[in-house]
Amino acid sequence: MMLDTLQLMNFAAENEKLKAFSDFLKSENAKYNLTAVTDDKEIISKHFFDSLVGERFLEKGANVCDIGSGAGFPLIPLAVLRGDCSFTGVDSTQKKVNFINAACAMLDIKNCYAVHARAEEIKPRGSFSAVTARAVASLNTLCEYCLPALRVDGVMIAYKGSAAEEEVAEAEKALVVLGGRVEEIFRYTLPTGEDRAIIKIRKTAPTPTKYPRPGNKPRLKPIK
Image 1 (cartoon, rainbow, N blue to C red):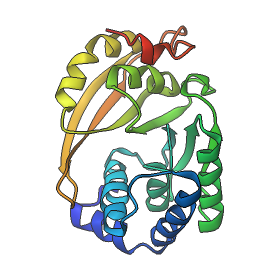
Image 2 (image 1 turned 120 degrees about the vertical axis):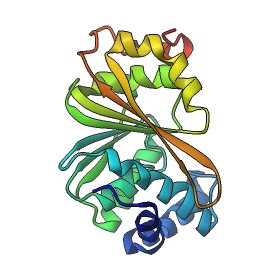
Image 3 (image 1 turned 180 degrees about the horizontal axis):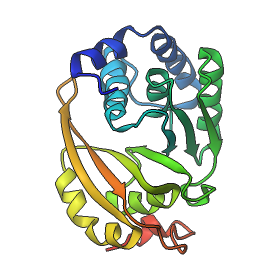
Image 4 (image 1 turned 90 degrees about the vertical axis):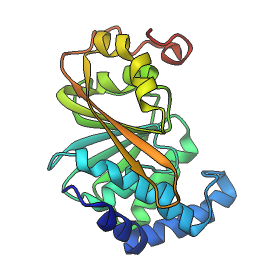
């Protein structure tokens, strides 16, 4: 689809389902502490717009896994925008999974649901055409979580801050070991002024079956 910045911003600010999701997020946040961003304009910019930027990397009809979905970003905004795609959210915190599924039911989002699992437990391996992750972990750790879930030639869409090149350099060995190649670093600026980047990684070879390692090893001992 690849909407331009103005189109994405208009969608983030004006879509009725996203407006309802914002209200639901704020009401549930009072109970569950889902996000530190509660101002309406900041939700639109830092959550909705930021999430939607990644849609440019989703092929038509993509089968997408969102790892570490948290309060539903980028999962729910992408699912609202891209009705042609299917989305599976994965999070290790049950209350966040419950929140996402409640939001999808309330908003009648039929192409999206969430499951309670760790990234290391995603099955079946190699079944997704795209994997997204936003504010989850450093890139070398993130590659170990994401690449095993992707089919060969699928794309990993990593939402990052301004230090994208440094993270890519640190992940060089992990990419080789896990079967990935950086295709693009897409830089953009949020309406609130913060610099962001998306690192697009193509899966070029099957990931060895010993990855991802269990026991939180991807975080504790990332591939370097």
